[in-house]
Image (tube, rainbow, N blue to C red):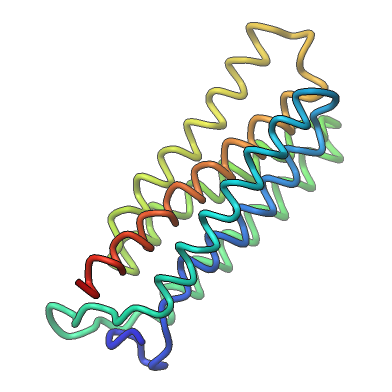
Length: 186
């Protein structure tokens, strides 16, 4: 259980990261074909198993006591999610209708989701989320750079790189939670 939680439940962050990592992974996997798809699917399955164990371990372990009083964060958290939803919807609408470039939708989503981790890190007092946000934004930059350098890859690169890159970033952020919970149990 998380003593810092007003609900008394185990932290949900690792579970949320694992699930959204799986969603991003499936998005990216859908763009691959042949041996690349088989290799990515095998690697993803191994990572998914490791992440599942990390999440289960983190939910069983006692959470550390908060260093001080727990700051109220409910309203800020909800506002942040509303802003993210509006940006995702407005951007997707603009990309798909006015710009007529639907291939950019996954990169836009990765940029917005990655960007939301910066204020979320402050709201939740979780500095690791800043790193996660930076990595997801870097995935978008790498996608754009790859598309510019190798324009023949663009039909699939706009889906594969953000999908697999964001999945890897989210899962990499979740994996240490299992190790930390193991260390707390001693």
